[in-house]
Image (cartoon, rainbow, N blue to C red; front, side, top):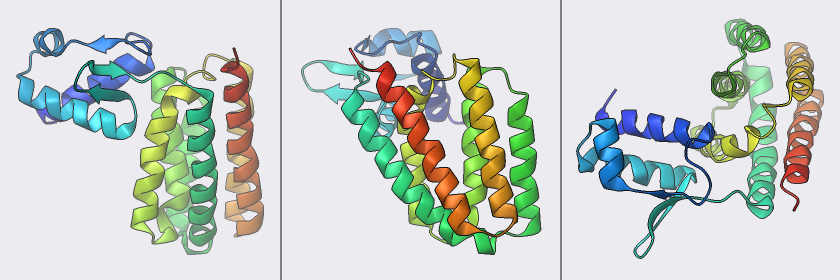
Length: 207
């Protein structure tokens, strides 16, 4: 792992677990010393996190953690629904048995994951395994960026165990439709799954 990638991962984790809160200013001298890095890889990490939507960089204010807003969440999840259903519809009939087996193993693994950050990564890997055969690399790249953008909002739900159990059941339902090579059913379930998560997040963000 490069120094820049290390800094990106550590700062992303700090934002996701609440160590760095929305609106917090990122003191570059302090962070560089804390991470044991020079300013060059730290700046590269901050640029990456700005691209992912975790932070904003202003000439006057410097770098700070982007606040969570209902409008931002709504836009991210609307884009996710549209792109992910497109990718899934194109992918279902091209997935190999080995690729479906991988998705199944990831879903089974997610059933037992307790750590909130670890669950987010396994969750993404499961979804990506369903889309990977869509043969649309630009779409996949956009989806991954949106997942990174959405991860801060999704963390709001991961402290609610009943939601996680329901989410996992919905994953299994989607996987069953994929196994039957039924793209329309799989997309309908995926849309309902993502929109339900978005609805819960928006409720939590209401003042």
